[in-house]
Every structure is written in structure tokens, then in C-alpha cells.
Length: 228
Image (cartoon, rainbow, N blue to C red; front, side, top):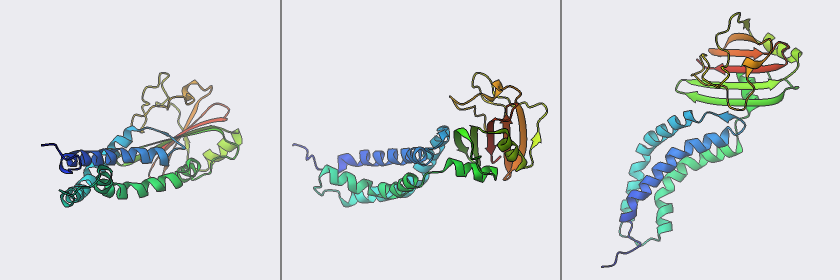
């Protein structure tokens, strides 16, 4: 007996598996779109993917199975069956994707919110990096500016000069011994350790920490700020 190509049952498992893959990938895609002004450490997105797959998947799985049960035995075209069964997943992820697309995270606003000071108007070579893990968000910022702008930034907070810093960036991109989750300076970024007259300043901000690294002339700035 020739199998009916429109029978839904043989496709049910694969449709549910496809929905799970979409749920797992959606947080990664959303972060890439929303934080497109940043360099991202995508290791944190793996955690988001697992959370999405488990928490949302448990909620959506009965709906997918219910839809498969309702269309069982009905002669639907494979494309219609695909759209119908996956529609709960699309309803969940599409609004978040649209928000990420039309309202991306502004790196300069993130700097101002974290530092309680605007990005200097004369800043050049602007770079921003973001990552997070459970209970912590971490940012790095790097730019060149005038010594006066750097001094204004330092004056905006209670920064103290670190006499013997133990957190200088290694030459080979290995993790920095800093309270920033073991992250290293992003690839392609300036290397503060190579700056002449490197100076390090520290402050507590927003119940977290902030390190400002400058060269001897205070014309280059590298910042690490986080929640821990």
C-alpha cells in the first residue's frame, strides 16, 4: 500500500524538533540583532538558548502536540501543516525579533547609563563590547579622546588611582585576572598593556565595579564595568 504523502503523523516528531531548534536559536539571533553596535561574547547566548528551550519549550510543547492531534488524519498540504504547527513558536519569537530589529541597544546610551557620564563628544575609534552571565552584565568600552575629556570622565565618579594593578591585559589575549568573569580583551581591540605610562583607576558604580585604564597622556581610554 502506497503511503499518503499528506499524512501528518510521520511529520509530527520532526515539526516539534524543528520548533525546539527555532526556540534555541532565537535568543542568539535576537542578541546579534539587538546588540549589533557591540562586539558580543556569544557564550552567554548559549545559556539564553538553553533557558528558552527548557522554559518556553515546556509551555509550547503541549500546544504543538494539541495542534498535531487536531490535524491528525486531515489532508493538509505539508507547507500548511508546517505553518500551522509552528505558529505558536512564531507568535512567541517574532515580536521579540521585531523589537530587536527596530529598537537596537544604543552603545553610546549604554555607556552613559553605566558611567553616569556621556561619551565625550570628541571620542574617536569607539568600540563597545557586551556579555552577561546569570547575575552579572559586563561591558567594555574603548576610545581615544582629549586629556581634558578623560579628566572630566574621571572627575564624574569616585575613582581612585590603583598603585600596583594586578589586572593588566596579557599580551596573548589570555583571560584578565579581573572581576569580569575571566573575559579577555576582544580580538582586534587596542591592547592597554602596550600603552606608555598606563594608569588604572577604580570605582564602585551601580552596585558594581568600574575600571578605567588610560595611557600616560590620558588620550586613550579603556573601560571595564560590570554588576558584580
